Length: 423
View (cartoon, rainbow, N blue to C red):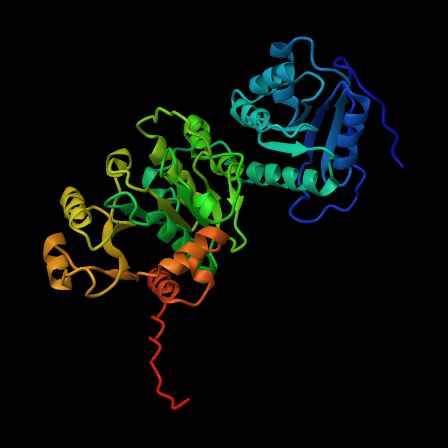
């Protein structure tokens, strides 16, 4: 059995993690790990959690460094991972984390017994890669270190010779589906949520729903989800937004759908010109399907110029104001090079509005692609129970499933024939 001693900032020994079984692909050079905590119990908790990691050299520090600037240079040179206890002095620890992460080369894991969303956001802004809550478990620590290891393996080695730009492989982006309404109250959020859930289930692919219906989007509410973070946190950190940071802001629905919710409070925000574009690019790099609830944001095309790889669903109703707005929006989209535009008539009830379908096509200058039946009772049940429309068999659920099957390249579900019976 190994015996370990505590070290101050002037010492230099390492200790190896206790596990001797090193599975593939962890047989390479071990991770060098620094654990910094002035508190004996919290430091030992971190060391105990690290003991199950199969390939690490661990060095303990019994205090925060007296000179942050000088010590951070040493940490960057000697350690792949720095594990920092926040609870002894949160402000000093955050200053240390920010300095270590300044160049992005060293991964920092922070841990705390405090359940404080504000503290977590500050840590992410400072550059921490992982935030672990106490009590620390070996599985949580190992999973965090495995993610660090994966990033380490994915980091390309320095290129000695010049590489032609065209020889570099392009990152394949996920599909993008944006829902926008011609007029407030058209039911765009209900459709976007149910479509996203159905797409996650039908495609069996990683699917993300982003609520851009600011400042009062309620996609998470429709799905019965609560989230500490929102699109505002993503926009405020657009400069350092990556797949890992984005994943820390998400919540997951029971269907497997991931959701980035709108803020639960009225939050003023000044969007940078490229904030929406950055968020959607990072999301599409990590998810195979990205669904956007844009509400009635008519500026979406300006803040993020959709190209022909995206599908935009324009949601309208059979009413003069809605059709007029839809027509004006259609005219604003480019004829070539723009997104694939599909018109959805929501709450469709043939013949009840006195508007013939031919008149609708003429008013919009294009045909209606999808008709979502009017079923007030089903929508009300969904809102009251936070259950997606696709979870029950109804005309609405079948219409939405036809949409998702279409984008997945699957054949349409045959219409149910009305039978005749004497009983």
